[in-house]
Amino acid sequence: MNQHSRPADAARPGASYAVEAVDLVKTYGTGPAEVRALDGLSVRFPARSFTAVMGPSGSGKSTLLQCAAGLDTPTGGSALIGGVDLATLGDDELTRIRRERIGFVFQQYNLLPELTAEENIVLPVQLAGRRPERGAVRELAERLGLSGRLGHRPAEMSGGQQQRVALGRALLTRPEVIFADEPTGNLDTRSSGEILDLLRTSVRELGQTVVMVTHDPVAASYADGVVLVADGRLVDTLAKPDPARIAEAMRLLGEVR
Ligand SMILES: Nc1ncnc2c1ncn2[C@@H]1O[C@H](COP(=O)(O)OP(=O)(O)OP(=O)(O)O)[C@@H](O)[C@H]1O
Image (tube, rainbow, N blue to C red; front, side):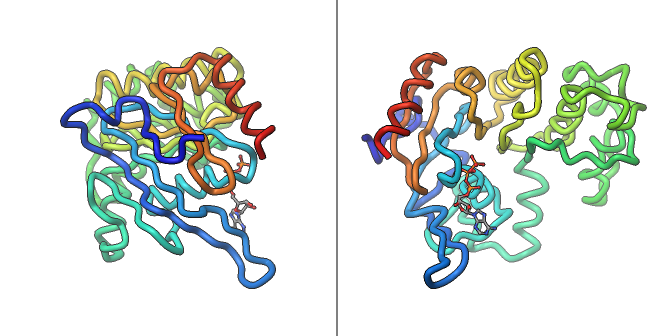
């Protein structure tokens, strides 16, 4: 096992890291009931890279994303976004970083049912007290294939369309980093492929950094690299792997544990 190896292109000269986790520890509960969800996990995600995070159920993948995105506070270690240690920020600064530099996409879409697609997409910008730019919303809707759907409510859309709305909501502020927690977990193969293509386009064309938790080797193969997590620690990384290699690494991980 290669505990300290980096994602595929981390060694690129001049590479900078969009997201860094340094010796992250996260425990839940106390005494005999204590769960060590992250057990000294260190990983760095280069800027403009698309990385999949994989590992057995309960290995700490979601906890890693939550701590790295500043949605949860680690018990120990540091989480950095663009070189800024989140622990050094006050509440207002942390809120601003989460709002402006980070986008989050969840498996369950988390759209507000009473709002239209367009209203859901612009909501974070409005909550930040800004007026969404109509041109930017239209351009984004076109990119996401949602131009004809902006007036629809979530219940009137397919799962794939709803996830594209959720992606639009995450992308409108052009965040540096998109964290996606099983974004294709509820989708069929075709809709999954559309979402994964959009995530890849965000990296290639818009220069964003995507960190995606997935259980699906095919979904992970869209990424530039895969990091494998087990028992709250980084155990291996794979560069540009195909689905068969990813599935094999996952199988070996199950056997090793
Ligand atoms: N709020 C919480 N309270 C107590 N324990 C928690 C909490 N959140 C997570 N855990 C525990 O921490 C460990 C890691 O959970 P986490 O959700 O990060 O794993 P995961 O790899 O994302 O799992 P899955 O693939 O099943 O979604 C698990 O043992 C889980 O039960």
